Amino acid sequence: MARIVFERIQSGVRFHNPLRDFAEDLHLLEIRKDPLLGDISIHNPYLKDKAKAFFSECDQDLIRRLVEDSGKNCFFCGDGVEKGTPRFTSDFVTEGRLRVGEAVLFPNLFSLGTHHPVVCLCKAHFLKLSEFHPDLLADGLTAAQEFLKIVYQRDPSASFTAVTANYLFPAGASLVHPHLQMLVTPVPYSYHGRLIEAGNSYFREHGSSYFADLINEEREGPRYVARQGRWNWLMPFSPMGNNEVMAVHDSVPDYGLLSEADVTDLARGI
Image 1 (cartoon, helix red, strand yellow):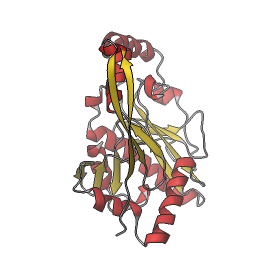
Image 2: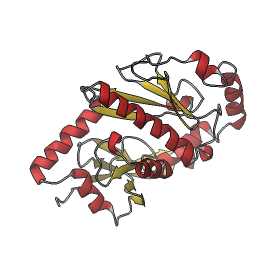
Image 3: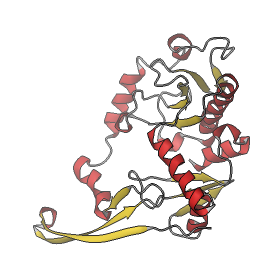
Image 4: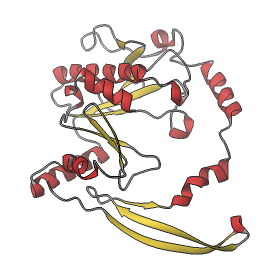
C-alpha cells in the first residue's frame, strides 16, 4: 500500500473585527491539497457562522409559500408524470417509463446527453431532509441502475455514468419535487475524467488502487465517518465544497454491477 500524503499549509490573518467592536482578531487558515487531483481548498473554521450572519435562520414561512406556489403547476404531481413527462420509444423501454416503487424514470425534456433520464422519486411534492427515507432513495437508485443495464445492452459506446441530485432552489434545482438525474455517456465529463486519469496514474506508479489505499489510510482517523455494508463513508481531506462527504465501495467499479444490497446500503448511508 502506498503512503498517501496529506499536504497542508497553515497561515494567520490579523484584522480589526467590527463584530467584536474592532478588537484585533486572528483567523487561522489551513490550505489543503487533494492527494489525488492536487486541487486546493482552504479551511477557515469561522466560515461556519457566515451563512447565519448574512441570512439568519431558515425562513420556514418562505419555504411554505415556495412549496405551495410551485405545487400548482408541478409536472411531477398527481397525474402530471403520465401527462406531462416524455416517454422512451418502445424499442428502448417497452412501457415508455421505468417504475420502481413510487420512483418513475423517464427521458429528460432538455437532455445534455444521449442518455439523460430524470427519476421522479415520490408522489410527495416536498420532503424535509429527514423525510428522505432509505426505501425512497433505494427505489430511485434502483430505477437508475435498471436504466443503465438497458443502456449497456443497446449502446456499447456508453461507458461512464453519473447519478446526481440537487434539492431546492439554493442547490440549483429547477423543480421543488424530489428527483434525481442521470447521465450515461461515451466520454467521461470533466471531473469524472480527471478522477479516472489520476486514478490510473496512481495505479501505474504504486501498483494499487488510490481509493483502496485511501480507505486503509483513513479508516482509524478523524475523517472516517462510518461503514455501511461494503461502503466506506468519509470526509474528504481537501473538499470541493462545504459539508462534503464521500462514499467509496470496497471493490465494485461499476454502478451497473452493484448488488441489490449495495444499492440499499448506499441509500441508508445517504
